[in-house]
Each structure stands twice: as structure tokens, then as C-alpha cells.
Amino acid sequence: MSANDSPSSFALADALRRTSRSVVAAQIASQVVSLGVLCVLYRQLGLHPYGLVGMVMPLLALVRIVVASGLDVVIVQQAEMSDQQVSALFWVSQALGWAMALVTAGCAPLVARFYGVPELTSVTLALAGTSVLFVLGFQHQALLQRRLRLATLAWSRLAALGLGGAAAIGLALAGLGVWALVAQQYVELVLLAGLAWWAEPWRPRRMLRGAGSRRLVGFGRHYLTSSLMAYLVTNVDKILVGRLLGEAALALYSQAFSLVMKPVHVLSTPLTGVMLPALSRAAANHRHYTALVLGFFRFIFLAMLPAGVGLALVAPEAMLVLGGPQWEKAGPILAVLALLVPLQTAHNALGSVLASAGQSKRLALASVAGAMVLGACFSLGLWLGSLAGSPLLGIALGYTLGMLLVVFPAYLAFALRSVRVPLWAWLAQLHPAAPATAAMALTVVATRWLACSLWDLGQRPLALLAAEMLIGVATYAVFSRRAIGWFLREGLRDLG
Image: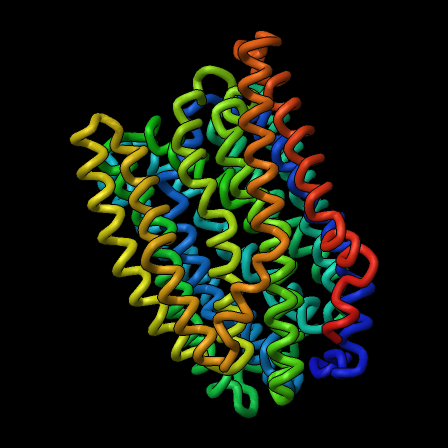
């Protein structure tokens, strides 16, 4: 099968329409499975193992960014690619995976010394091999995205997530502590790589060079820069917490952040898989391109604005239900960070917009500026929070306010201007999500007041959370029923 078997512009809308519902279903199922696994592991393992893994994860995240080098985006974004080019990129990524595994292993003593936790040496060494498994299925997943086989990819990720979680639960119940989380990483990556190779029939040729592959790697370097800046934004705060406040504080902060990113990833992963190839193919027709961009953001607001506001409102009960009293202090942190859900999803989507238009250099420049601003916000938040006796909450506020007031508005204006999409048209996509979300928030607040004052559910977090969620979801569904009905009936039909 040729690497150029990507959908034509005529087949694109039909492919998106056929896969969209299946992808959404798979992502919702992934969210449910993930939360179920976390509920068991939080209670069984406690804070310490999550703190240890949280200290290693910034290094692993950096390694995976370097290993990827934007090559997945190259494969999805390019209109034409030969098998020789794809094979050359495959072997480049494999070499990077092995090299970075060795680098990670070599850094293990330094990580333990940096945090002052000797146990981290063995944990870092154990996780070093995940880089090799990460790249093993990397190319095939990108090819599935290129061919818009998004449902296959989504269900494969769900299977890997579920079996990896089951393995971690079994090992946690056996008393293996942090090694349950290490094993979870390996099981997930092995299964995902195997399923990707099974689903995608393309096989690499024995070559290290391909015609024009150097140009493609050059495109990936610009995207790599933006990914590195995103890495700094999402990991500097965790490094600061782990270094200054210890593993227990890092467990609370990093898991609150992880819970916030779950709905973001649930939508961003399949959405990027759709947006990048769809917008890349439509780039020559500006009217069609603009309609696609606006339609995608309308969907983002419809799904993520209520998700972020709702999670912020129910955060204290959510942490108690998931982890019990030992995780209660993560509730206020989760409430503040939850407001990032719609912003982060839209921010990720803007990156796909720039990449689809071949604006990887502009994407890199914008990412550098954003990282610098948010780095200052982290430091200021930590300082002010420490003075107030709540350093974790201070960092969370610094991140959220910096993103809301400075970084996202500037990035939005820059990205839309780069692709000539009117800002006023983008803002118009907030309707009907914004009024429906406001109505939902009011009913959730009212439900909490009634539940605590009349029904005495304040000491029963599960019952309170269930009541808030049912009322909130029902209210939002009523106020946004027309927009939701349109999406369920039509999907992206009108945008094709």
C-alpha cells in the first residue's frame, strides 16, 4: 500500500462523517475507563508512587518530543509522500528512540540527585525503555491518521489503555507500588504498537534516505520547536513543585493537572487527527478552509466550555470520590486548573491550524513567546502562593490567569491573522455554548446549595457529585439542544 493513499477532497467529508461518531464514542469510553482505573489506583497506591513517577515524567515527556521531532505532523500534513520518504522517516525515528532511551538511562542518577530522592534512580532506569516502544508504533499511528482511519486508531488506544490499566491494578493489588505504574506504561505502549502494526499494512523499506526527506525533517524541526515550548509550559511547574515541595505535593498538583488534561486529550487527539489532514487538503480553497476552521472551533466550544466550567464547579467532590480523603487537597487546585480545559483545547487546535497552512515557523515563534510569558507566571504564582501559605494554588492561579489573560488572546489573534480568518467570525462560534454553559453553572450552584442545606449531602460526596452532574448535564442539553442535534445529525457534512 502506498503512503500516498490519503483521501481526496471529494472523499474527505464522507470519511469525516463516517468516523466522527465512532471516534467520539471511543474517546468517551476511554475517559470512563481511565477514570475507573484512576479511582482504584489512587486509593490503592496513595500519593508517594504518583509523586515518584511525576518526577520522572518531565524527562520522559522531553524525550518523547525529541523522538517525535514533529515527524508525525509531517506525515499527516504533506499532500504527497513517497514510500521512500516514509521509510526514511521511520528509521530516523527508530534511531532517535534508541538514542534517547540511552540518554534517559544515563540521566537516572542526575534525576535522583536533583530531587534528592535516591529511589528515583531505579524508577528512571526502568522507564528509559519506553522511548523504544513509543517510536515502534509511532509511524503507523501517523499513517492511520493520514488515511483518516481515526476510528481504528481510537479503538486501538482504548484497548491499550484498558489492558494497561488492568495490569496496573493487578500489580497494585499485589503490593508492587510504583512498579504498577511503570508496568502500566509498558503494557500500554506494547499493545498500542502491536495494534497499529496490525491495522496499518504499510511496512518500512530497508533504507535511511528518501528523496526529499531532508526537507520534511526540516519542516518537522519547526514543529519540534513549538512542541518543546509546549513541553516547558506543561512541565516547568511540575519540576518546580517536585524540587521545592517534594513528591507528595507533586502528586497532588500533577494529578490535578492530569485530570484537567484528560478531557482536553479526549477531544484534542481525535480532533487533531481530523483537523490536520482536513485543513491541509482544503488550504487551496480559502472559503472552504475558513468554514472548516470555524466549524471545528464551534464544536470545540460546544464540547469543552461546559466541560471546563463544570469540572471547576464539582472539583472538590470529584477528588474525594476518585481518591478519598488523602487526595482532598487536590480539589481546589483542580478547580482552578479546570478553567484551562476550553483554552488548552482551542490552543492545541490553533497549532493544527497553523501547521495545516505550512506555517510551522510562525507556530514555533508563537510557542516561544507563550512559553516565556507562562514561565514568568509560574514563578510569580509560586512566590505569591508561598507568601499566602498555598504555593500549589498559587502556581495553578498563575498558569490559569496567564493563559486566560495574556497567552491565549495573543496567540489567537496571531494565528487567525496568519491564516486570514476573521476574529469576529471566530468569536461568533461561542454561541450557543456560552449561554448554555452559564445556565448550567447556575443550576449546578443551586443544586449544591439545595443538596447541602436541605438534603444534607455535604458529607456524601458521591451523591452530591451525581446530583450536580445529572442536573448540570440535563440543563446544558436543554439549552444547547439545537446545536447538539445538528452535530449528531450532520456532523461535518455541511463543512465538506
